[in-house]
Length: 434
Image 1 (cartoon, rainbow, N blue to C red):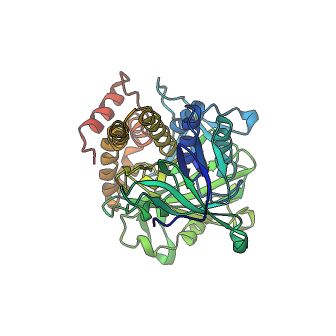
Image 2: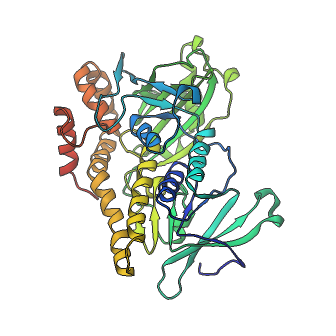
Image 3: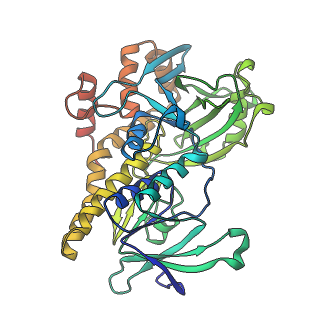
């Protein structure tokens, strides 16, 4: 683990491993503050990522903070809110009007979304290295702190041409997703007491491509093999505005058969039950069904140790209430960047370390209580009876559902706000921040 590659490719103030939303956002804010930043991405843009492609107002705010052009002319599709279907009820809920977040969401394919963010980080001054497969940390043998990473540069298909190199920096940020091999090499393993989800999706040519609302189906039934089983999860339909729909499902690991479910087959059967005119049929499918894990509620900790910080999925930042990951990836990247900028401005090693150690404390202050509420929610909906009661009875009360939307999407004003905001903020404040 401490062995170095033959050549030092580059040195910087900070290395960010992974150029997804978490990594690109971290690199952008670091570079904007004047730091030398290396952004290392194992793939080459444009590249595909499994995602629902729907962005809530939380993620929209982060894009605005990064100066991204989110106009329709730049290829973004706006949405007004969330359409919820379940228990025989169809309810359209607009995003709340808040001081803290815009009142609209966005849709954009991940095929170029990540590239837009990485390009923005480059414009701010970050140095992006693509086809850069990080293989492990470089540790200071005396202190055990991370001081860089080893990597292979070049196409994976032509291994004989790949170069073994070292990148060096006093701080390294892991933004390498759920698998986060770098975190594992640093001894940080997934917490088994935290919820885990999966998401599977595909795209269809469909007349439902233009839609003002993100659509969520709260009752996800498994009707294969003559059974009828309500699963802890939801289905989604997001119009992409380009002639296609992103159709998928997300499930939690609260069911005993979680690992045994054929999710691709489940998605096919679910789509087959949709109205024929929507076009969610095999002949209209434009891409294969793909899946990804959803690491939730701080499922890997600590978020800082020995010069090493975790952001986004690497730190298990996905919202357990709704499976949203992009907003929290970008927010944690912005928080991490702010901490690092302040730390590197300190004049002593002790001062820098004290500032860096504040990072996990800030994360728990911002998300800890809310994620604890989410873990309770995950346990509750793992009971099919609770899930059925919620879908059949809760949806008939629009005021209650407005509260639920704010809770599930984590959209409240932290100061002031209405009665719903104060209730949700109060619950999150008194919940454990673990």
